[in-house]
Length: 319
Image 1 (tube, helix red, strand yellow):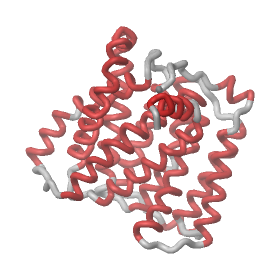
Image 2 (cartoon, one colour):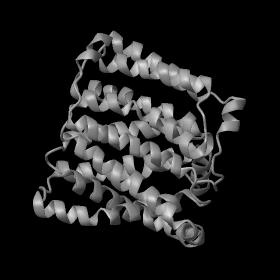
Image 3 (spheres, one colour):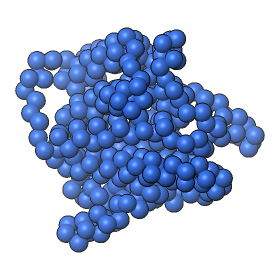
Image 4 (spheres, one colour):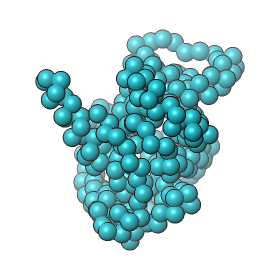
């Protein structure tokens, strides 16, 4: 593919919010599965710090020209930019990996489905954006689909779920990410690469003291092929690619229309379990997928009310 053709494809993709917002949960589902897989092998702060440090080093050469140009805008609202970095990069992911050491997969996936509710709450508090009727119905329908998948078609099993330490930590992490989603809309006007470059670097830097403390108290980890591969995956897919997709998607359609795509995370997670762990595809999977996808379509519809409610930041194309 020629360079001009590549640029045209990237430009087209950067203006397709629903493709971007579908890729985001795909990458995040892999992060949850992998994070649970290496729990106990790589300590949570180490996994989070190395994830963002490597992601920052990878993206820096591409982001540097934009960072130099956008630095006056960043400096003018540096307190907000630092807060976004600490909340969305440092705190959210460290808590997520910590939680995965103490909870089972079904609990984590179920709790992760509450993400759109936190996004809606903080969007209303910070941005004054209310859920439209379609968004509310869509979130409810897709959440029902998530429950069908996670509870294997037996909704009565919900009464038997017990919250533990990891569940509560994961819930706190999702509340933090809801705050990040709302605050990111208020960021100054800048290129997408400037935004991820600054937040990745600032977020990783803030984790250094915790990383040193963890190494002193818990020790390091073995540099096995599995662990190195896990670090490479989390640095590229759920970090650089997913955050750029998510941030651009929010810019294009607003927080409340983007939030229902969270519900695709357990859908992709269950597909990965079927494909990689040998689980059988059953009728409740199909029913759950239909409900989730229907809810996402309902909530993401572009209505006049939604356009008036959303106040996306105007940005340059990601290309």
